[in-house]
Length: 375
Ligand SMILES: CC(C)(C)OC(=O)NCc1c[nH]c2nc(N)[nH]c(=O)c12
Image (tube, rainbow, N blue to C red):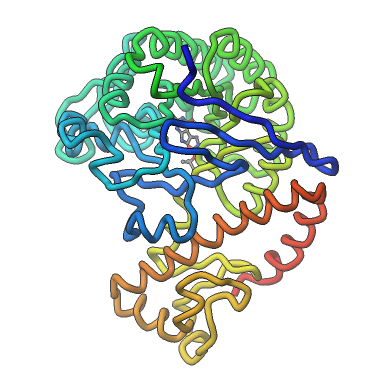
């Protein structure tokens, strides 16, 4: 049976080992390495689908846990699925809910069967399991679904991480067995194993012995130092099939995206650009800019002189600072447009640098200006 999601390798960067590829899905092709804007509750906060297309967001992420507790996957299914519900006709990836339960819900009990927890909205007692996570994602109709996993806290005891990854493997197998729409939805497994090379290897071996259309690296960007994350990537990405997409979950910042691409990662997601936009922090080619700083009050230039986004073409730092300080929603829309465009443009530049076999040079040039100052 034709797989719903396939990876087409295009080229490997001679200088860095990074790779260009295409992920084919039922709702279109994603040129990788790619950044996925996060739309947790069926919206990338304050953005319209048209605005996301203008900045060429190729794929967005949404969350099983959040849509399960509100509005309920039955309503989304009745609407014709998540694409129809949110008027987005490009690819959608849904995360499986496990991670969100561990990070959002306070009272929870993990057993072999699954996770019992209290809704962070109204305290209702709820249950998620591999089978329930698959039923929800099948109802949402996302193009790429994530297996139900446990993301161990950081730091965590070696024995706990080992037992957890082995349960995550058994849960992944249950997801594979209960997947009811493999012909039009791809299911990615999630490699865990904390910061331990032998456990990452064990998790990768167990999961790649089962045939998933794609593989993710979970359990990183959980508070560990960046150099440790890069070390884990150094020995984990080579264990992942070269002919399948490699997705690094929860990452990330501009530097982490470049370093991840260099280590062979194809897909990334992170709430950073949209989250920091809400308090007026902007990513610019010369580092982070905190628009609330008084020095921007009479600065009538753009957020980033090198940026071509709608915000930078039409509005000044002074105006955006005024809106953010006045808690005007339009201010958050402008900083969100800019931050998303910034990361999407960065990934276009990364793909261009891979095409020209110069990603390491690009990294050095980017860091030289990005690390300039934290203004
Ligand atoms: C703390 C942040 C969110 C930045 O990163 C992580 O937690 N990183 C790990 C992560 C993010 N999203 C996931 N989804 C799932 N199913 N499993 C995971 O391990 C993760």
